[in-house]
Image (cartoon, rainbow, N blue to C red; front, side, top):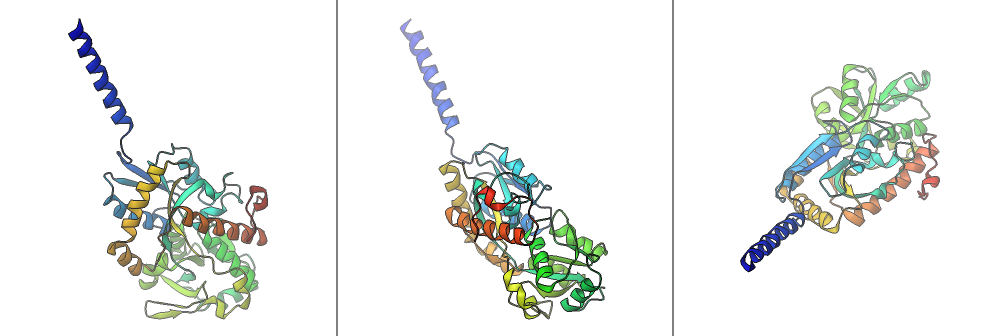
Length: 335
């Protein structure tokens, strides 16, 4: 009887130990999925695929990248990840453009819902198809003034940084284009090349190969600085319109995030892998080759940057008449 009891007790203890060990496995012990809120081939998608491949080298699991597009300012992807457990196994690939989802009615959360990691960003510019009759930004603006609201323009989705920059150009140059939203930068650029739209506003990183390949013709950088690309100098729009500094430049912050409610262990593991990846030669060389500026912020530092972006973008959109929800009603303070 005693032996039987001892064996039973030992078996029970072993089972309990195994169950405890199984439930206490260190994160991550299974593959992670990153759902990018913008389309395949765009800047957010490209950066996430690059950084996840580097982070895998410092984690015991794989990271699978998918695209979950649509909604207002990438809200479909954010809602999808929000509805997943906050266990760190579903990340969201996002950018600064997602901070406008709330003021455009895409979802009812402010951006502090996330615990973000910023890889970097690239400056915006305005370009036209290579066959376009417009050779300068002034030519394009003059045509828009002559026929207000008739020249179709692609600038990713409504509320994206590219859309805000298009609105800023309209405001600063007193011209009106016909905005045509797309599910990401890549589809918008393809639309310009195909002649569906007459201009496109996206980042230098996203346009570089198309400019070098002679498919897009750059007219102006939407930053105070000019840029060198494909053997030409792209002038700054600031040199043409004095009023642009009221609205530009609006900077990119591309990366990924986990639920802010995730455990400290999850955040720590992701931060360790992220920091190691960002310190690698691979990331530095990739950024230099693809016209990106490196960021590297995470956690509280990244949250502070996104809070500033959310405030700036929300009230810029409000001033330009492009919000459906008052940012003050969401608790977003004016910058």
